[in-house]
Image 1 (spheres, rainbow, N blue to C red):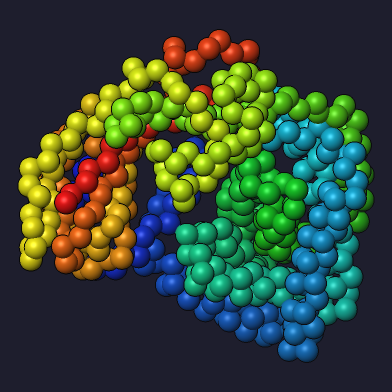
Image 2 (cartoon, rainbow, N blue to C red):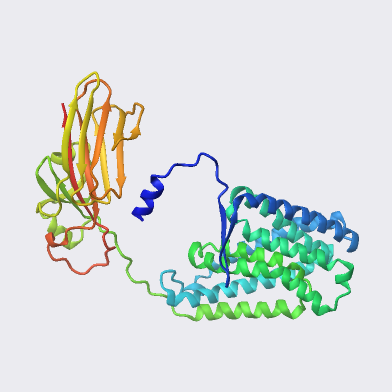
Length: 463
């Protein structure tokens, strides 16, 4: 990662705007990508195909504008009803997903049972409402309204989130092509099995692309809200409208029974007893050059019994004036051994006077710290360079520099300041983790590895 950061950090930035790439995975084909410049041409092609399909349907299937507009208002209402119903079921019947635990893979089957049950119920409701809508507006109008709503969503996705447009453009293109193809006279004369194959081909891209996103969005993103997976399901159902329109009555009933059965199985699992979560270690080992000492620090919070023994010198948090000044927050502190870290290796090269007031110094991290912080106080920097690279070239009221991945590389700084003040440069090398060999034995605790911090600090004064 450091090599990649240096490689791209040192490369020239192309001033020309980039359209990016659209990436998605295909089963058995791996990762597929194409230029973001194709997003709007594909969206335009989809809109043109929708207009052509509407014209064909009005000519061949006697679709009328009033029926189509009526269906355009009803179909989004059905999708919203599906989302609200799934969310209310999650919130008000928690016993159905008591075994849910996103951190435990062995409980994923219970989560997927719940998802399958909800999806089956939503599909049954969608098929039933679509059948009623088809009776009022006609089958072709109900189909076209679903696809037209998806085209409107595609326009928004192409504008606001072009990277996700593939979830809509390819399924909608395939569904529109299948719908238009079925109205061709030659295709209309095909046997029912061949026509059914055309419908299946129109639904296949949606199944291949949307189903994995539906599952992943439930397991990873926001299962407690159920908004994203239900949106993916609505997309899949809307694309499948031409196929579902030919479904028999028992299909909706079967889905209803399967949904209730899936929810029953998901709710039959015992509740998950969550283990205590890992706690971040807030302890800090701080080694300070000006005071020539080291300290254990902890934010002003309640301490556990082991931490109370470490900070036995204090009854409550205090402001550590000697190191951090009167403006610092209250904290727990205790003296620590000095051999946990090396001090920053600094050599002052030049302390220029006014009118060209500046400070030159070199810094090498003997700790190979992954993070180095520098803060200028008491002066207004006007120009700052590091190893000849300009970091600041205009006047600033304050300046903080944070460097990552410098390891033990020699860093030469030149800081030019306004006027002729006495100013300081505070240097802190931050290393994750603590020198555990300096700490007293502690009982086993669920701590996040390397969540403590070790800091080696120095302050350079320029008079």
